[in-house]
Image 1 (spheres, rainbow, N blue to C red):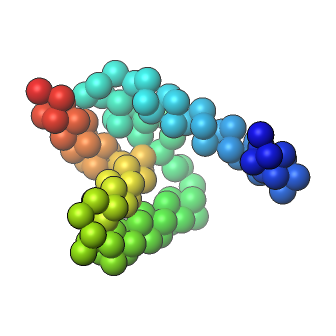
Image 2 (cartoon, helix red, strand yellow):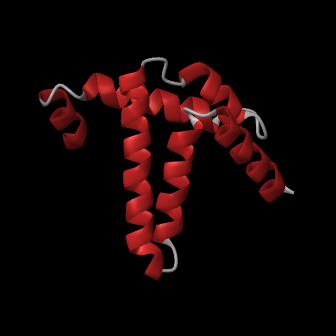
Image 3 (cartoon, rainbow, N blue to C red):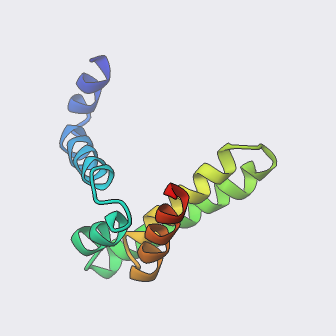
Length: 105
């Protein structure tokens, strides 16, 4: 609860609600289509926002490279970077949908 108050004091409460809503929509999506649907809904239309998303994905991948010596966290950051890219590029979204359906089998 103190966390929520801090976010509100910093003016980030609406941002955290928007992020929570997007994560919830992604998690409740239809398996095998969830990333493509997410891309269609939330893919950046503005070039500056799209550039920011690619830079943030690159940062996730750099963190993954640094953490690749550890058995688990590096792969997690790689997947996070891929998920950020999937929101911007349809081929990446389709790849994640395909990967998810193969993992679920």
